[in-house]
Length: 253
Image (tube, rainbow, N blue to C red; front, top):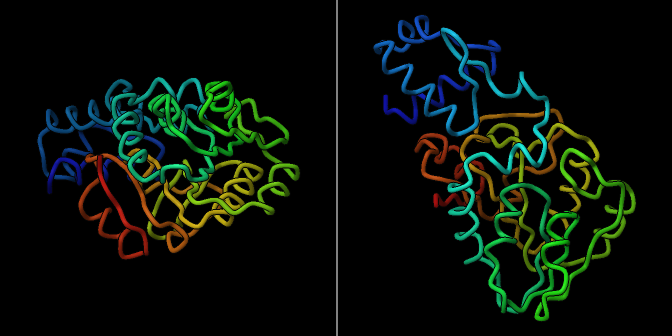
């Protein structure tokens, strides 16, 4: 078993059991305790677990839905690589629907100053960062703003999206799996994301590998609705193959 596969297995166990212990993992996976400690350190650096004495706890137990501020501080280099790869998919002069989230915010930060686009977004931070750019047409979706994600959601948001047709929608997600598709903890956010997916000719998911194999309460899209998943090279080959078999193209930045 490769390190990335073993770490994914450790994360799956942690999410099912609520915590993992070094000694029991070493026995179950037939490796040394030092190997498990290195795996847990790698997972903590990815923001997937929090180390505790003798083991680790999945971050979901510590914070039901991480705030945008806390997610922005995690895996910044990985998110910038993903963002740079996603920018290659944006058509010059096209219309782009941009979801709220820390990875999509990284796309905003890397967007060239001379980019000529129409950007539609429900992200308050994204709108603030893009406002005033002379070559952009910026359309901000209204609605009730969630404090956790700084995203506009609700009937105003979904009704506006129902009347749009855009070239590309770039979506973030809390969970990503071959079995359940794209999921998120909040129902209103799920409705907004689902409406975004329906409004686009092409759907791109920008999500780091820590989201893979995780399922949350509300599903907003199947992988058959997704054209491209851009993630990072910590994603195991097995999981990448499962996502491809479910209908989406997968590239690792």
